[in-house]
View 1 (spheres, protein in one colour):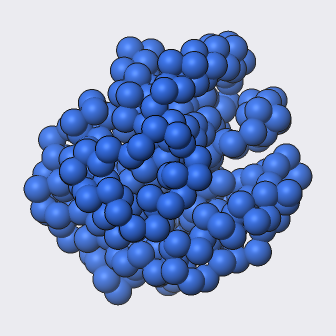
View 2 (cartoon, protein in one colour):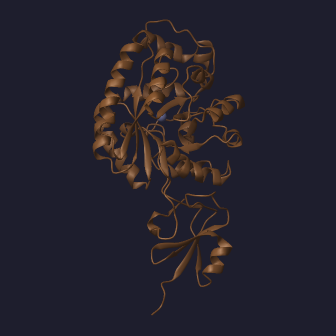
View 3 (spheres, rainbow, N blue to C red):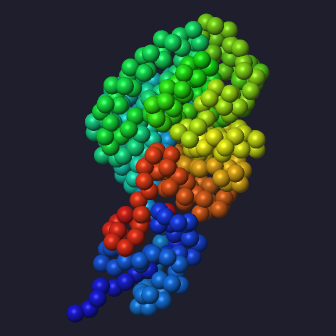
Length: 369
Ligand SMILES: [Zn+2]
């Protein structure tokens, strides 16, 4: 009788879901099961007959797509200035909904993710995800309400819906997503943040994405002002602050807050994010398609901000495979940081444990990039 052959899988970065991602690491596999992990030299000493097999850029646990809009999966991809993006989504709103969400969830599953964070715009999509999602994750109910005089009324409605959905939580949990600091009135933002913190509800908000957003909040000018005037009656009184400072002043930043994009930030704001324990979800391919710039990865790394990655929707990203986001940034940052963001950063953002690749784990759970 002969022992099953041992292979020692290795890649530029190897991450087992615990400890730090390794640059010269490996995972030993025998008969379809992990039998060891650690530095490559140690594994070669332990398994002298083991055959070393290179497996691409990285080996990792199932990645996390921390920011999707599954209900936009039937929309065509938009490429161009950010100011044209929201009109693109509005013009195709007939395609937005349950059918798109079903298609998106299938694509997400096929991409091999271990968990997801989705922005939910319609009640029927929340019902669907709570009832049928085979993947764990958080479904963040989106609130879009710029008119400040409606804050109380909208808040009461949102709280009622969330209370009902939270009784049905299982594999998918319920979160709250005030859309952005320019599309939710300051009094409502404050109330939603207080409510989420008191109830332990995760909060996701698009923030510091475009320069137009900064102009609107700081000086009350630019193309967002025209949009605001169409949607709200009360004249806009700009807070005179950049997006992250504005959110901080309203009490929105905290350990349960997930900021999506975080492109338009300075070092002081990155520090503020780090101090409050808020996390940042980067969507680099969407940022490129919408021409908003690049998030300052090195600044985030220097201040120890927890990062995750998301594809954003099919309206601004070519697919829902979050591995594409890490590959897009591969030469721009320490690849260990990207592998961590793809896995542990994403699981932590969603309040889930990171799966571990250790002795006894089926080799099928070892993903490669
Ligand atoms: Zn988004």
